[in-house]
Image 1 (cartoon, rainbow, N blue to C red):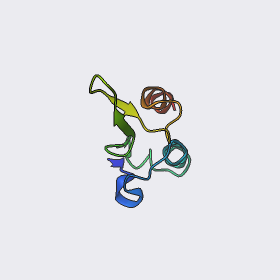
Image 2: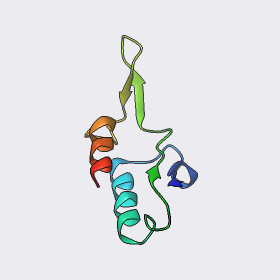
Image 3: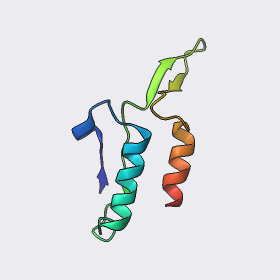
Length: 74
């Protein structure tokens, strides 16, 4: 099972929202109940660059890769 911030934040998710959700999952028993993922399926991306690649949204200042690394360690 997982948490999807899109359900209540739409595309307004921020790095801090995601970190708060991860901390809550770790401290309120959700992990023990089987929650294992945060599904950030939309809103993390910014515009495409000149090569057509997605760039991070500035609401994710560390970048989606570093955020994912942090979450996997938590």
